[in-house]
Length: 185
Length: 126
Picture 1 (cartoon, rainbow over the protein chains, first blue to last red):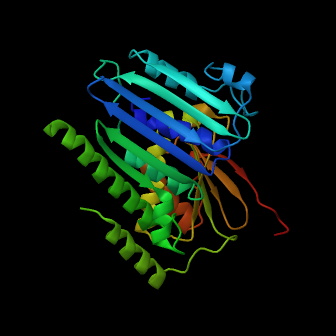
Picture 2 (spheres, chains in turn orange, yellow):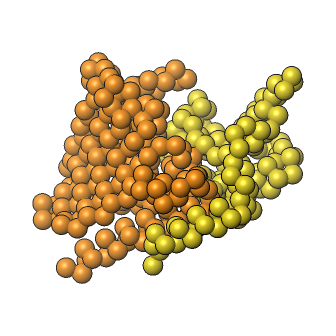
């Protein structure tokens, strides 16, 4: 996958599959440490210890349609190929946390890509799920929370097409601003 | 600059103009968003679905996503489920095919046979 945002979409799909009702996506860019951390946490059904142990293998899946599951294997490969690492914390009934650390500035680090598009597309297809995005660049943080959006919307559904477009544009603009102020320092 | 005020305006317009969705009886579009689908371009396909439905004001069409359907080589896959429950799976969909599928199939009810993977008839009793 060419963008970290596509990996993030893939991991959010895993959370959806685990029947999550709330997904937290946390991105931390620390330029002084030269480190990028991405964490995806959900409140879905979680996995057993045995499942967690095998989870990064290319043949791990909880589905019955086919015997492969490449998502987390690709995630690990992306992190490890640029001097990083991955971890998983999960237990049945408590949800799952998938994290990765990447070395900023590494030649093989994929660009973040269209994270706003990832969020909008995910919510367009699964408007019943709440998503929190927390994006930190050094000491600046921007947070997006669909629960607040729903409060504004009242009885208008989150899936209403102009709302999904607004989410994409709003996130895109705010994430771009966060990125720009990074270069101004 | 896009703000929460824009969202409030969208909400007010929506409340004034649209009949909010009713459950059941609607056309559904399902986009395959497993790892295979995403790697093949499903995010852009879903984006095109949302854009086209907005442009044509097809607010009654339900959009959802599903995991791998087991046919990874044919991804991105889009399934159209019509009001009668007939399911048609389109293969190797890209944004331009999305627009044609919505015009031909969703709006005009005509399947595009060249792009279908399979067709499953709906319940006859319904």
